[in-house]
Image (cartoon, rainbow over all chains, first blue to last red):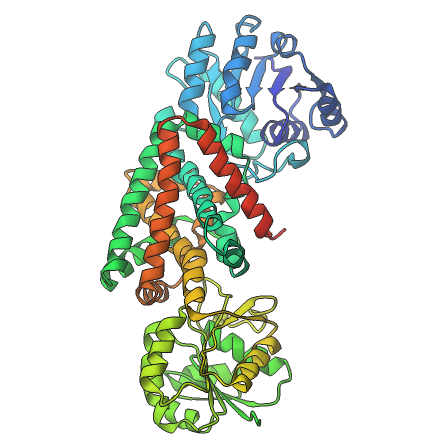
Length: 288
Length: 288
């Protein structure tokens, strides 16, 4: 299958890093960035992030062999509505959204069939966003999760996998529901907790003192609360049920610890802390 | 006042780093490390962490001009009982415990008077502990909080301040209650949350998958859940009331977010997230 034209919609951290990594990998294709204002597009071209840029999504989509939608979750629908009428039969449509089921619902509502749709989500990011945050090494050694549909053509899935591997990512497939449930627990919940934590500290009397006496533990714990608030709002809204379920679970575990502390139940406190520490040690490798 | 003999009880991360930093600062004194087994003491001497080491706390305390208690919170009482009968009148007693009011209660119960007692707490640490984790630069540019008592002699407070400044720390004074309340919120609560978070993930079906698909956000968020579990258990037990109060507050803020997500209340979600993000940006500086 020929792969001449790749159209990346949204040239921020995620889409821009995908485009630039692909270009630097030597993969032969022309990458067109679709942007909201041409000035940003010109800058992206000048920086070597894309080969060319346009504000005309319909025109770019019409000649594309693959379209990567790297826009906020709540903008997906609008983009799909624009590309639906102009898509060629062979054009693969993939995305980089943080929640998969809503994107699939949008695609199902907008597109005539889903055999060329391959939903995806790179597990990589930074607190910074926009063109200046673009990093062609963003995906190196990071997991890229694809959630193919029953309708997805094998060659479309393989193509998307191949492109992500070119960026340095490691591709794994799982179901959309598993994806949304797992990410609610490992990513969306920690973000919600970090936001809640900082908000709670800010509401304290002597809030200035509170932050003045904080150390590296709090800094690292709340780093993810410096992320883009609109993006995280949209993730919570679109992945509502799994996120609420994850908060419920966390509340239950926190309640056990609170009860143990209230009752000076040293054994339970230590059992939970030790189990958590050992679990983390088995599964998570810290940067040196 | 002469300051010939400093006795550091507990030559782990906190006490060992204090001793070695002091030695390397050129401060003229003899530092005796009190350890549980002589082998460890010999190693600490060999590594240049202390000048000499002993397992005999009473003997070391008897000839000390200043005693630094750097042992777990729940061991403080035992050490104070041993040193009480042998203390010279001028000997300053300070500590590095994470919770101040319990140490003060212990000191009040064991010592005949408190005018030479200067409770303290360095806001510094690492996940590693023990002799191998000792780092003479641990306190550089870190806050050292002292919570002098109404009875504390000025010259005793100034001496403890001076020693910490020699290690590179920045000393501030506050009341024991303020200390314990602030630290419950900025340090003890984040640790409890990190332990609860990992414990919740571990209890999920497909826990392996959950961790496999996690990224840097979760790693940093839960880093503090790799700390010493006994130490954190003791902190929760000794700072019970402020920690439970901080958990209550966090639960209330989390409930607001959960309700907003459940009701798809985009405005409230974004308001809280934005407020948290801005507050963090004002108060916390990330490492580059």
